[in-house]
Amino acid sequence: MIKRWALVGWLVVLLGVATGVVAPAHAQDSPTVIRVATPGVGIGNRPVVGGSAWAVVHLKGLLEEEFKADGIRVEWNFLRGAGPAVNELYANGLADFASYGDLPSIVGRASGLETRILAGGGRSNLVIAVPADSAIQKVEDLKGKKFAVFKGTCLQLAAARIFEKYGLSEREVRAINMDQATSRAALATHDVDAVIGMSDLFSLRDQGLARVIYLSKGDASVTCNGTLTGSASFIQKYPAHTKRVVKVYVAASKWLADRQADSAEAFQLWTRSGVRFSDFKEDWQGDAFKERASPLLDAYVISRYGRAIADAKRYGLIRNTFAFDPWTDRRFLDEVLKEQGLQNFWPSQPAIAP
Image (cartoon, rainbow, N blue to C red; front, side, top):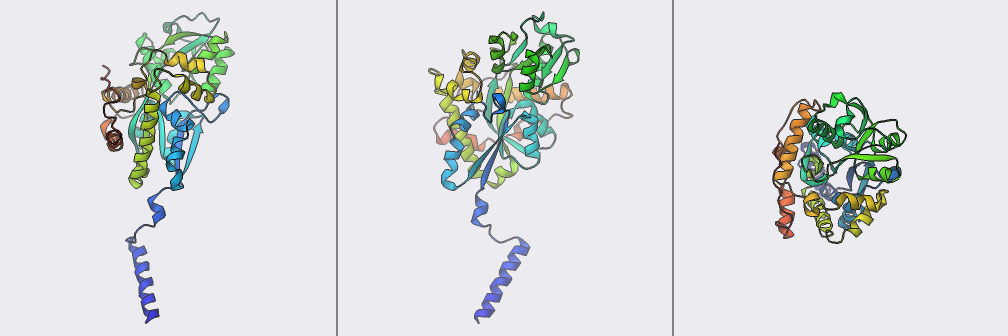
């Protein structure tokens, strides 16, 4: 009798496997690792970046702390190839989350990557610099000049907008594709006439190697915007863990917002990237932290991404446009803000006119 029931039991198991109706094992309810793709590296190729709430998440080990009790490992991948390299990881199923810029995420989405936007990722000011002894004085003087830009990143889209604002087309500038480290070196050695970047260019200026001819500071219509994104497959499989990732990100965003009156702690934390304290201070001075590093998917983000999608098509960077809202998954952010009592902590920012 025992052998008969054992045989029946094995037949049930085998039937369940064949038909796919066996309940998943407990291990399948939780990932063993959460993989984060980070666009960029610090000075000297160090695996650290600064200047954002997501950088706070990394530098303070907030994800590791959140999932430690579950035995879930957090794997950070810092990519010198920046946003395009993030897309490669997503395409190969090697990334679960990333906070990166508008253009590469848009290119990925337009190419069929199954990602979802989970929260706003803040914005970055832009800098255009030329060699210190250059005759170039203003953006208009860049016509026909060798201009270093990291193509495929938000810098390319921002540069095209800046050129257009000052009466130039991208074709009128001799754009050369270079990552940030290479472009800084090329500027110092006069191998290019100008470069677009962020606060890391201030150090070249202070060394007497460069001169800044353009700053986007104060103009929210010309910035690099970003969002926190997740793999659709991870989100579908592990919604509870996705919500915890968003919760950690919101906590880091609030921590940063709370540093407005005394920002030294944040700037010092970010210096682990190799970018100087003074560079972060100059970059963020006068900016409202709650606005610049807001996690909200508000009218500002919607308008900026709608414009970015249209601009990417207009500049020939994607073939077809698409709607922004179906790309988003707001449920986790909405739940976290409500549970934490933060629905009104960040002011909702208005849309930017096209």
